[in-house]
Length: 66
Picture 1 (cartoon, rainbow, N blue to C red):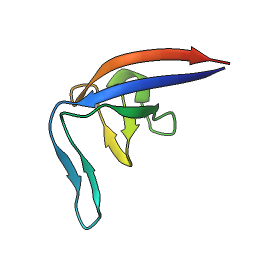
Picture 2: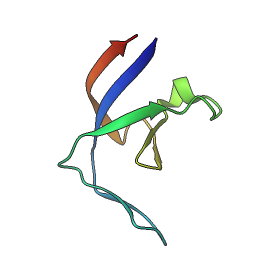
Picture 3: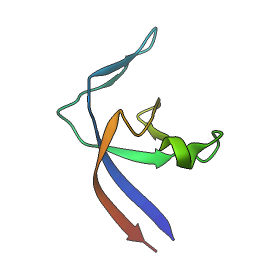
């Protein structure tokens, strides 16, 4: 079973020296950062290649799919 999480960043983000941008007005697919230490406590989520903590995004929708 996979979890799909839709998140919206609180701010605009740009990963320097790359073409990776996040727009605070758009909704993105989020992936829980299970490969990071303390990911649950910190609410770490990958969004478009950028690692965000729980203070940097809002969860818009969570779906469970099989």
